[in-house]
Image 1 (cartoon, protein in one colour):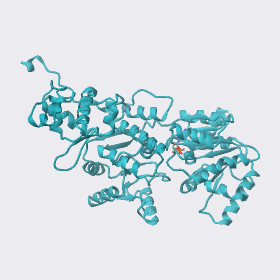
Image 2 (cartoon, rainbow, N blue to C red):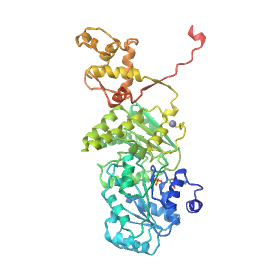
Image 3 (cartoon, rainbow, N blue to C red):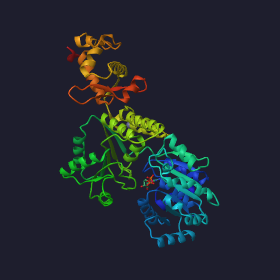
Image 4 (cartoon, rainbow, N blue to C red):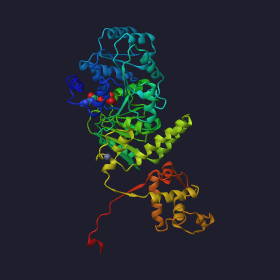
Length: 519
Ligand code: ADP
Ligand code: ZN
């Protein structure tokens, strides 16, 4: 059966071979089993249901929330000689009717619809009269309240499928891989003993980079100047940041565009089109940009801020290099980003359970930003991809030739001292206590009685202060604003104190001294 599928791939699409992940999904579907495919954007999921659709009798129903993409997909199939059509709210009633008739006459192999269409009784009745071997559901996480875009109309999918005279095979796809969401999808879509396949997260053409402690605006200015002829996206957390970066880049004369929910519909579609046709080279956008854009030659995606979780990050970063050509994904991290994301979580009216879940996911995102491990492996591990390879050699962790020194114990001593001083003092005071100073101010506060007094006495006070600065720049600690800034602990510091997060410091390798130099 797989041989037949391969023949279709070669003859219709002109690709010599399936990608590793596609084989298992297609085999599972052709053997008649429900399937949940967890694949990132650009992972190649379309082929996973289109090829089986071409091998099955009847028409395959594809449910997708992305109305703007339907036409493109149908046109692309048409160009390959595959009869397909879509029915959605952009069509007039007469056109809808014509396409329905066409479907009844067996004119199409694939029929794309938005989930809202299932609310029409007339449509459901028509579907019941068709031969429907397969239903493919895109963005399947929309059925789950745990997901980031719950859509009530998705809840109608399972009852619809149940109501059909003959139950089709169901193929659901999503890029969201958390346990809560996968369990929800399987339950709410009533997938029958579904095989779950996690695939395609290894996008080898993407070079993943995390930069900490950069001057972000300067960096963006320089980067864009060096890539003026390549399409790229810069994601920022707020509209304000988008506007500021947009002004900055326009002033420098770059072909920049902007996109956020504060623009009018017209402005947004103008920007999107201009980007698609390369009149705009660099798009500065909030996360409102992307769902539904299909531009394959995006050469870089820069995150001006850390996103709220790994799913959001990889979905956005994954918009780079969909054509398979080398592309860069750069995340500019600062400890301030942690504060912003926490603020956003607190602003949402969430149940305590949901809130805890959001914090947990944020923490993984923070861990990623600090991880000395291969970043690609971190991602594959997180999304649960089965085949995790060796380190990639192509991410900022793999390329960092500095030595990592474990400073977890030193960090714990510092954090513990700051906590015992009630997070009310500045860097030099904390360093003095750790050094074991008996200066008057320290005696006045009775800090000589703290168990952390003098526990770093073997180091010069200046070095202790430097370590505290490193921990600030790495986002474990935060300096308050104002004339007398005090050091406070951030969430990652608590994880370190509980022994759940190690701390590494990157140090330049000492040049090997020759005997002559020693003398
Ligand atoms: P998704 O829908 O998961 O975002 P697509 O199905 O659009 O991704 O696939 C992404 C790109 O990869 C497309 O350009 C597609 O033609 C290409 N592609 C998919 N499968 C293969 C394959 N087996 N060989 C070569 N290219 C492929
Ligand atoms: Zn790597």
